Image (cartoon, rainbow, N blue to C red; front, top):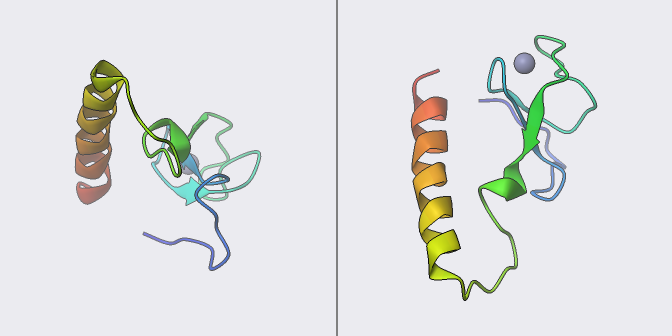
Length: 71
Ligand SMILES: [Zn+2]
């Protein structure tokens, strides 16, 4: 997995087509404009009081980890 040295979590995007991590308007690998911000799965400084939301994010992180591991 390649990441830019200066990539910030708040700016990191996951390409929905090839799962590349990038910070651009479109994927540098496959040129897809379909992406999702990583903070959707990994809140950086969020205090979570909503346990249901926390559970959902944990499940989403597992899915993301599997997706990245299968590359
Ligand atoms: Zn891509």
